Length: 244
Image 1 (tube, one colour):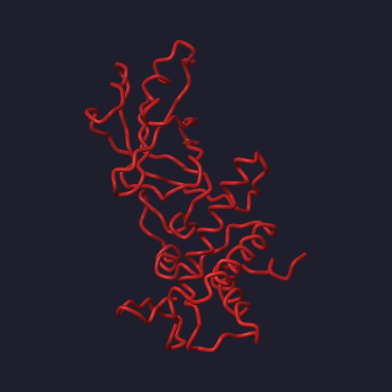
Image 2 (cartoon, helix red, strand yellow):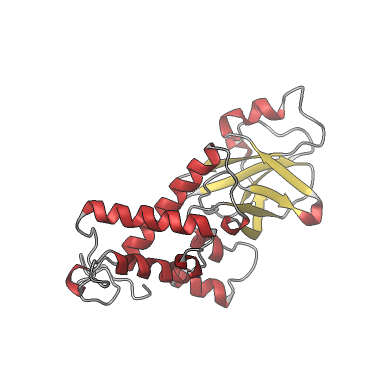
């Protein structure tokens, strides 16, 4: 087992990567990469690797999965429906855009014994009107309006919310996302301190993402964002983030 597998948060992982980038064991303050720049690269590498893993039909461990327990729904404008819902059905959408996912999330509502399968927006009408469609089949689609992706679906039940389970591009966003209930203290903390989000990576992927990120910064030669003052802030262009 690699020693890297003891990491619990992105902060711990990113600090270790930053330390490893200096051959002496710790970089001088004048050339330190900001933790935020490393964190953003880690997310990119994680997404890239998980996409390749899925395409190769390799298993993805449960450690990478997150569930958003409650996503509120509202009635949607039928004018933007790719097809008019059948009589008695309601066209619904999420009240807020959802976090971006690496793959379409698993959509359910356990209270209503409801689940829906993903269909691309352009194929929604064809799928829902197909002769081969089973009577109890339910489908949803995604539309990014420029404010992030929204889930759209229609059904003959009065659904008020959904539960989403999936691989999210930004685990921090999924961790603090809420649209049904008041934000908890924990969610508020994570929203303001993304580096303290749990990794949501299994042991093997932690090692792979560590190496991919380390190799990326080693190849670039110079940091894209310098932590000149040694305070874990982005000290350029008047941009600062006091939480990282």
